[in-house]
Amino acid sequence: MEGLIILIFLVGYAAIVLEHKLSINKSSSALLTGVLTWTVVALISPNIEETLHHLNEHLSEIASILFFLMGAMTIVELIATYGGFEIITSRITTTSQSRLLWIIALITFFMSALLDNLTTTIVMTTLIGKIVQDTKLKLMYVGMIVIAANSGGAWSPIGDVTTTMLWIGGQISTGSIIGQLILPSLVSLLIPLLVLSTQMKGDLPVKTSTKKSGTEGLTFGKNIIFWVGLCGLLSVPIFKSITHLPPFMGMLLALGVIWAVAEILIKDKAVEIKDKLSIFRVLEKIDLPSILFFMGILLAVGALQSVGLLTSAAEWLTTNLKNQTVVVTIIGILSSIVDNVPLVAAAMGMYGLEQFPMDDPFWELLAFCAGTGGSILIIGSAAGVAAMGIAKIEFFWYLKKISWLALIGYFSGIAVYLLQKSIFV
Image (cartoon, rainbow, N blue to C red; front, side, top):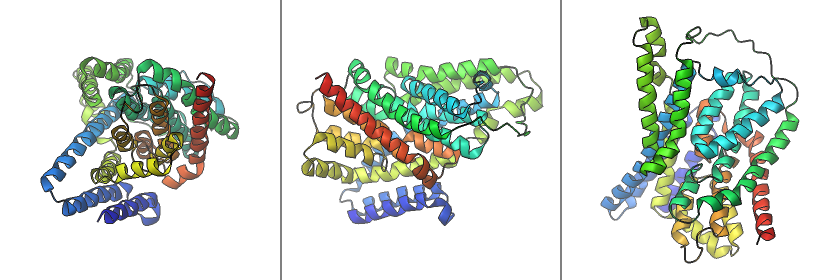
């Protein structure tokens, strides 16, 4: 029956990949895959109570991610509705395609370390949509944003969920992970960035769109909403550090604050203005299918984990591949196919601190590979899934245009880390 679970996952994965060929929305395929895999798990389970317990555990983790995602998307959409991103876009005056690529990528890289790769991707993907109107060109920028966000998140304890897991678990320390991974992570971005920037020549196409947003001319509150939203996003990791509550609680707090501020700003305005800037109008714009897609994918991966398939895969790698560097490298590549969280969790369960103590190269390289390996495929990371929904990126387009760039960056970063270790042994 485990073979049936794998088969359902593979068929569902194929349906997601072939979304446009089949004319079936990827969210539908993901939900069917998630539910059917758990259905099989329940049918073969000798103890349904234990299975329900595992499902609830996974559902708790999934809900925390979805609440975080919905909160971030709402804040970003509210800022966009008020025209807040004009504060940034008006300062980016370059018309050079390659120069803009460098600016966006580097901002994303460092912002991801301060916030996290998911929030940063949502913000920067929305931002680039305000700057670049050509669809094909915009997708190239978004592809690089995904690489930059995952690379930036890998070297920060709060930048990527897997790095955070290792940090909380005591496998890595803050100073060591930053010192050891910032250069490899930067290289994993710079190599693809150098390659892509040579292909993007000339200036940005002249804006020709005359479409009005419906809030044009409503400039009041733009600065207030922008700075309240930005400070709210930046406060999430601080809130987590102080309270030790999950990140989604900090995000919901930020959403509550900006919601209250927005209500105060429009309370004495005309009905037409209230209707255009209402938070309820903003909530209508949230991409619910992308959130459901995310839920289905995580449910399916949770089913694989609950029956021990991911742990078995990790054990097989360890048994058959004696070189730990090769094992970790393959785990990173696998994280582009299935979620990196259960893979890292499996590795943490298999290897104790007695075998690999805190700040051992094994944990550091695992943090790098799990964080950056997800860039190889568009559905390999939370950042990629978010970008896929917001920018409507097709799987095969990303595979053709971006995956090879992410792959060379991935192996370049590993090479730099190993070289760094051999020099400063």
